Image (cartoon, rainbow, N blue to C red; front, side, top):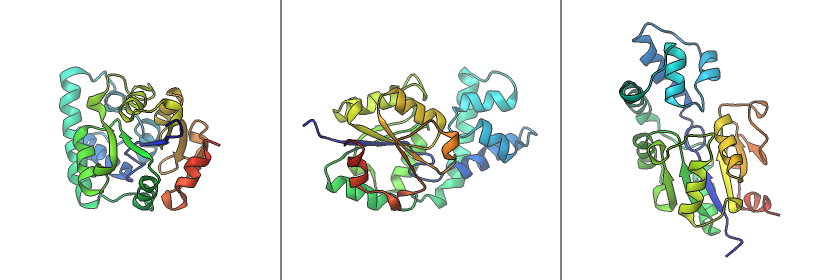
Length: 219
């Protein structure tokens, strides 16, 4: 079926507005180490970046291997603890999912976050049963902006990249989807239009979204 459409969502800032809680977790993590990055520092060096980049940048030395795993674990556990009581999808997300399912769209999630974070969110946002592909950081070798996570998602869903529409909110994420040869909708939860590579169009939240708007991207 050549006109099959697949929609793949990033998670942080796309399904849920998690970035403020990642900031809080990093603030707590760094304050234990007598560092106090500002919100502007985070905007420049945290959103959409890998933990190895973030930790190396703020700690001013290369963090890798076993040390990276331990620090990452500490920070992500803090994040889950802080965010757990507040998990909530971005406005209009679940009705949009229903609308897509009713039109036989295939759905996937592709995040750079650890699986435990994804499981926390999927445990609270009723989405799991609709997903044909679920990928977290443990499932890929190369991280965004490399297209691996999106190409693997397309393969899992049994479609070609040109049948996919990706919802992304970060520079590296949008780049990964474009590098995979997919259409991209920019979600303006943590960045402005100017801060993202050119997308097919942009949304503030999902109240303005519908299957028709997704289908129109293929006209």
